[in-house]
Image (tube, rainbow, N blue to C red; front, top):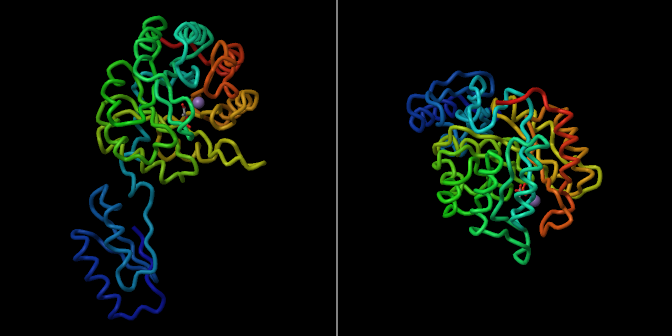
Length: 328
Ligand code: PEP
Ligand code: MN
């Protein structure tokens, strides 16, 4: 923690500040420099709580914390290998499927076709968090048997979104990865419950969330029991012409800081299937560890996000370009 002290702070005021720091942060070590104090807190994880204790003290101009201080669990994963339902060491991982599970036959046929086209996992969303309360919200629990059939048919892991803490246990019994959607990246109770399920969690970056906010949400997951976390960049939906659809710099920074796999979602970033296909290639070239992509045999039939859903043929072409070696 670096504390910038106020300009022209008197010796007495500095002494008082050091006394207060020692009282508020027992066990801390302080190194003094001109105009600033470098404070070591002793134990990881203390920094987040310490900030509020320090920033309001007389003589403090500003306090800054590093990502590692604030997110010691999320940022200390650099050397760990990911052992979850996906093998990221063998090249990009492709999770594909329609936005939502709708018609059973179409879903199962799409699942089989996507597997043959190179998918390593299936999108299997039963609950859709929609901006409009009037929009289709997903088929809900009746879809559980459909996705279970798809898993049996293809052998592929299922990725599904939990939008409510009460859904976690039942979804976790059938699925392999629980997705936290962009709207729920800041839903801390949902993060805790999802983490406690023990399943791999796919954490999307919230719209307009900073890298630090995203890392803090990952930190919640690790603190509350998650062992395996996959990050996913999905863009900001700014709708301003010329704005980047996916923040690939932020994706690279998240990868570097955490050592976690980071996917790109070109579908929700672009909202257009042609742009999504281009963006998918761009993201993979920029180092994304894989894609979460909306794809189906018949995007025209979808009740949600059909416009941004690519056909299986388009998906096959993308996956084929980047498939490195066969997986076990
Ligand atoms: C999704 O992937 O199904 C989804 C709803 O995306 P997002 O949370 O990024 O909007
Ligand atoms: Mn969608």
